Amino acid sequence: MRVPRLVGLMAVDARETARARGLSLTAPDRPDFHLAVVDYVVRQYPQPGAEVPRDAMVYVWFDFGPGEGGGGVHEPRVPRPPRGGLQRELDEPGDPYLVLSPP
Image 1 (cartoon, rainbow, N blue to C red):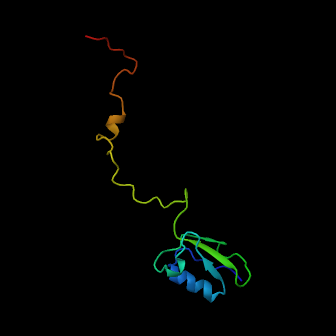
Image 2: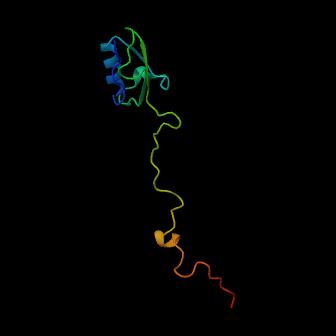
């Protein structure tokens, strides 16, 4: 039997899909997995298409692990970047080796 793709499904749909294929489903990051309904699966193991025996356990996660994405909202940044765009990054035109002496 092949593992179906569960990533992207809501919890309720993932449970139904697994049950229809004769697979057991568990979520290590959700002790209340049996109550989850509208949370979306973001990762699964074994991968979709893997060959497993009937009644095999498939693990699903609803939160990204460290370093796996799920960057969230990054705006607005505080403090804001300085105004001026590229002009602030460029040197003023002229001789880059010119040394100005104090007046």
